[in-house]
Image (cartoon, rainbow, N blue to C red; front, side, top):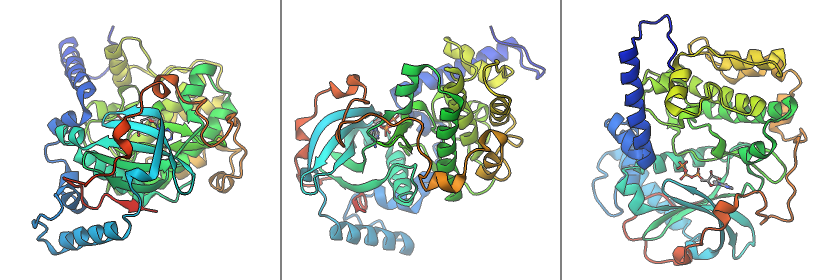
Length: 407
Ligand code: ATP
């Protein structure tokens, strides 16, 4: 049952709010893009100069603004220069993940023999769901973040007539929560290590004015040495400077901050809430405010006081309380971002420079037989058939200008 709070929320109002969210979330199942479209018809990303160019079919002459034209031109020139990577350069071996717009596959580059995770997106699906914004955002963020040790690295991107390809590092350690599910909870020092690497990646994104927004189990991967790799930048929000805010509703309900659920303004501090939710799950085995009934859980996130059982250190509980503060202005990280987390006693044993230099030995090293090992990937993915047409390199047809890239 929904808990009554001091705020003047009547039962009827609450029911209204919950059924509204129910409809939104149900809708998200069919496509977050539709939902984003509905909630933010004037989504600023569609006015982004890069988006303008990216969405426009190649050869169209609408690039009339000087800046936009220059960007279109340089993207296309770069594309021509770097057109050496193509779908036919890879052998597509196994499906290792699925997403809203296509599949992620383990692939081997035929020339250099290296293994990559290739994210293949169907153009038709992107256009049908009006999700060009997601793809622009993902590629643009991937291009900006090639230099952080805990963010997935983009090596190439290219397109065929029907598909867009993003060639990424293969994180062969699998999803962090694949391991958590098997072990139920992590020791505090193991959870600290992962939380610190995630915090460092989020702080870096924030320094580039990018809010990640979608910290959830499926997007936190491990590399072969056991370090964190954040992936999936499709829901990132660029251009959030300092305390600037936005309102778009997106992300996974379990890990969403209350201000996002309530469609109030939010800022980069949503990521610190997300980190709190993930840390809670690593330490207690369940997300905070958990209920098997989703609607109850949503209401809990918004109104239920946070209860932290014993079994976690005082410092750990204090950190969770500060990250899962409903008042985003008082949430840890609100003023000085990641620096505030770095100074919290829970992280006192972490040497942050060593962490970023990958000098700290990960607490768990995935056992792998080689760079193409699939032991840590859920068989639900690897048993899926590999589409035969992936390596077919035909004419690009309706192109997404500027998509192609080589690192
Ligand atoms: P969503 O619908 O959640 O937005 P998406 O279409 O953006 O998903 P991703 O989340 O990027 O797709 O990838 C889907 C899954 O593929 C991930 O949950 C992960 O299990 C796997 N995956 C993605 N990138 C990699 C990678 N670099 N290495 C290994 N596995 C990966």
